[in-house]
Amino acid sequence: MSTSGFLYRDILKYVLPVAIMLLLFIPFINSDFEVNSIGLIAIVLSFVLGCLIEHISTYIKYIFLSIKKTSEIGNWMSENWNYDKVFYYLDKDERDYLYLTAAYIVFCRNVIFILLTYSITIVIHIIVNCQFDIKSIFLYEIPFINDSTLNSWLIMILCCSIIYVLVKSLISEIEYLYYPNGQYDFFAEKTQKKENCLLVKNIYGFVIINKVKWMELNKNVEVEILFKNKFIGRIKINEYMYWNFPLSKENLNKKLTINFYNNSFLLKSLEYIIKDLNKPYIEIEIN
Image 1 (tube, rainbow, N blue to C red):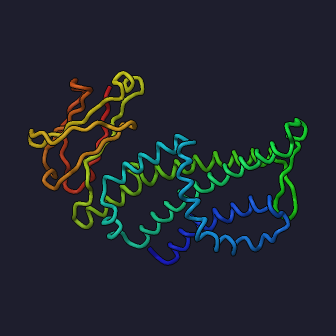
Image 2: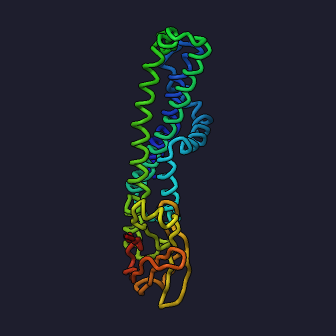
Image 3: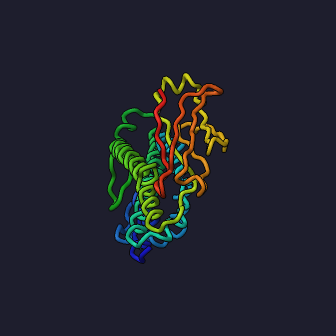
């Protein structure tokens, strides 16, 4: 990765979130501070607070279940390729693109966490200072930069709107980067063909099935792999209807039999050939 790529990545992941946090929280302590100094303070504090915020922000997936789902599918996808080797073969521009897109995902997650914390802080301020006086609650103002104040409810509505946009953007970027047929998948397959070496670790796939059928099957579908009619193994697909299975070189350009079971009942069977160094990704519909 280029020097500028590392710089932009660190600014996105660490410096900008810390600067936003300082801009929002310092006025609670001192609203008459120099805004111009935030940049320098953010750079210094980012060495400590940046990593801490990044770590804590991973827990927002327990608040937003859609983020939890996309993150877990992304983690599942990372099992299917040897990304260390893939990155070794990528050129500078491709590495920069992947690193910066991943940094933007972390940035969104960090800012969501900061805005959630800020909104909770405002609610606590309202409860402490208004003592449940209805008029005071709606008129309560919070300190902001340059010794100014803003209506607390307008600020919280703005925070919620920004959080909504960032959650949508975060999910979209994770899907675009990490999902099957996403950018990681594309670069990995392209590199595998270009370097003529096996970089994929698993045969992997997705079962297309409607929710009613999925519930009828009690979310219990297993995948059985046979190579030259010899049983290799059987695994259960995950809750998001994805599955993967270890792949070896001897499976390339050979016919595999893939069976899908619900308990002992055969739902579907297909024959599949992994041609040359194409990615071994399979989507199959079960009616």
